[in-house]
Image (tube, rainbow, N blue to C red; front, side):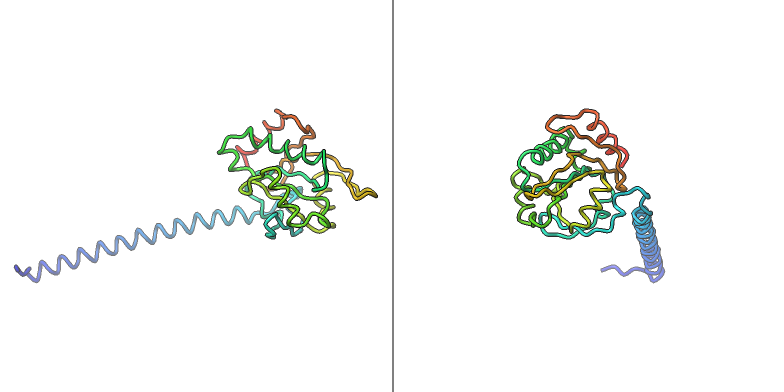
Length: 214
């Protein structure tokens, strides 16, 4: 084997050190850039919610998988939300199907950027199993749909913030308004519809607009 001159060995060692230093510098810059991007994203999420945001309500809810969350956890993308109760036999199923009509009219990309949420008026009877039955009966994809329950006091606060009226009747049923509300990424109400059982082109247009500017 041919041996290299000591000077050649020194030059090769110096070149290797320079390459290593250069690579280390690039990695450091990349790491700083990633950290900076993460910091910017965290800063955006840490911005105060608008004063009229529904997400300012301090309530803990649980979904059809019995997972706890807050309304503010929905921040970041538009949300279609309404309120229902499981034993409702006529209006609530129509309400849910009306939300599904909106969902079906969206492109796959649009659908991926929209959340759908139903909150029950009747947490005493609508336990996790009841929420699961609603999701199963209406074939609501858990990737997009959250079926939720919370305590009665929080139900009242959320309904008031959404402008939904309800009243418990003597027979255990509820008299309530049927409204689908569109929230932007910060939980502000940007549109609503009371058209149930039929498509509402004007509302769909508002949904698409919100998806373009969450």
